[in-house]
Image (cartoon, rainbow, N blue to C red):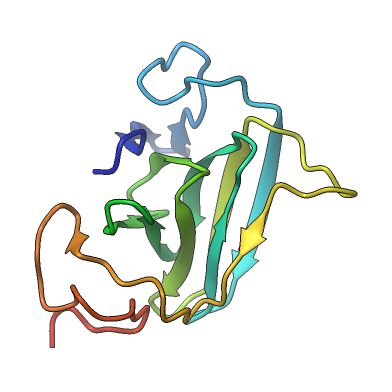
Length: 165
C-alpha cells in the first residue's frame, strides 16, 4: 500500500434485532491520525465513476461504504503506484486515504452505493481544496498496482477493466 493508506476492518455484532458496528472512534490510532471535523454522505448509481481529485492543503479522507460496493483507487504521481481497494457495505471497513494522492471510486455491482466519508478539514466553499482530473485522464498510468505488476500496468487506468475475464 502507498504510505499513509490504511484499511481497518470493522467489527459487525449481530443479534436477533439486527446488527451494530462502530464506524469511528478517536482511540483508533492506527487509522485516525487527524482530528475529524466533517462527515459527508455520497450516493452513486451503478457504474458511476467519481474520480480523479486530490487535496493539496492536507485533507485526509476516511471512506466507509455502507451500501453497495466500491472500487476505491489512489494513485501516486511520483512512484506511479496505484492502490485499488474493493469495499462493500456487507463487509464494512474504514479506508484512510491521504489527500495528496489522486483518488476516486467506481460503483461496482448492480445497486447504488452509499459512501460515508470523514475528513480532517472543513470544506471551504469559497476556496475548495480540490484539484480535479477527468475520470478517464490518460496521464494516470500505473507502473504497479497494489505493489505488483499486472496486465493493467503501463497503460492509462481503465476503471471498467474486468479483472476476471
